[in-house]
Image (cartoon, rainbow, N blue to C red; front, side, top):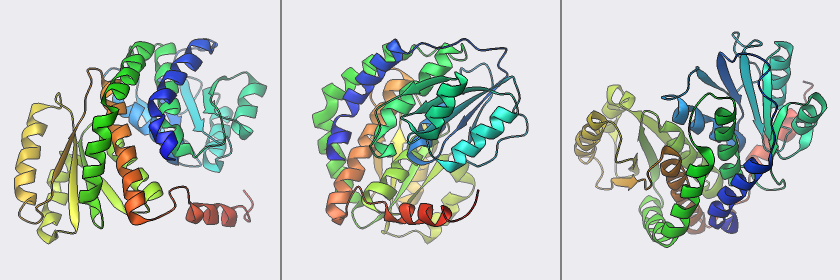
Length: 329
């Protein structure tokens, strides 16, 4: 996993090459909405991209993490199925439901049944190399989803240009990121991390939480600003030094949310003396997002070392899947 995290920038570069070489069939008709279906390491890219494009996308975007699909799905829906293995049962069932509704379907996968479906039905599909932990392939799924929004004319995000800038930024800042990520990991060791992000960036906080869960075998949670001001902030009246808030921030976050964060920190500091800000770098939303995601990946790696756990072990998930496999679909 360490090498995969270290190669994050290279994954972005390879994604650009795959995007440049992959040909697509135009939409078969108007697109009125988008549904992105995927779970876990295969699905977090959809969560983040949906938030990222919402301010500029000309149609509504819904993220689906279930066996079923929203009732509004029809032939004017772009349904994007994301499953790294191609065998995620929830995503496969949702895809078949979308097929029955006549949705326009595009896929992202490395193989399995989803890739077979895409090839048999001539759906647009972008594929990457298989055999790795889905969570380590984030750069690919994120980049490919961005490309779909650009190709279908739903959001002008200059994908290749901004991915190239992100690749260069991460190469330039890697040494600094390693130092700062290890320092933050030391502050989170033996604590419970609470990850805060402003509206539009909660998916990035979710990615951090998922990486702490899977890589470091730690519980954590995320919450959104300003929503948490109306509930969780009161919960801090029962806060202790065992909880460490981490604020994932951008210089261009809405100014009133920036002011909210400073007030929140003043309130929370009465219960814990550890509060951390992690500021993104870069100009575009793609650069900022990939910087923060990569930073969090390193934090989770260093915590896995401190916790002395097997970063690749997901026996709890494997057990769940083996038990579900005994049940008929």
